Length: 182
Image (cartoon, rainbow, N blue to C red; front, side):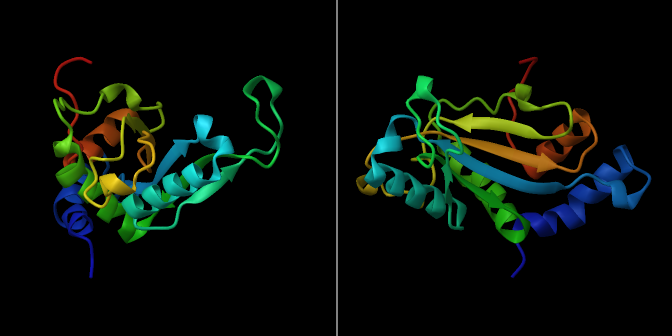
């Protein structure tokens, strides 16, 4: 069963982008991957908390999250080689579109006093990054199973060649950006 957002991309979004930006149909911008990541912070030494964070991100993404292990020791941060320093999951294909659909239609509207996602998260090459303060906005997360609330960073990589094209793609997908200049 194909994702609702993937069908919308093929039927509605792609023709609009082709008309506005690209005459070549193979160069039309599309979402390549979505990476959800969480830094461990003070949870590095607590394996139970790390496991809880990993389970939560796996629930949200619909795919198993992996622990990110430190490659080098950094004395200033009290990090030793081999310690878990974060959790990440990379989504592609249909799971990526399912996650983006859930993010735009269910999770972000549940945020209290939400005014939109800041437009300043573009990197100049058509990729977009933004952070969320807590994981409780997702319907899969059960509040009683959470040991400690944590935020997450969401990186959306697109094939767009510039920020204007990527902004238009994400706007058509349904990401609610802030109104005005900021």
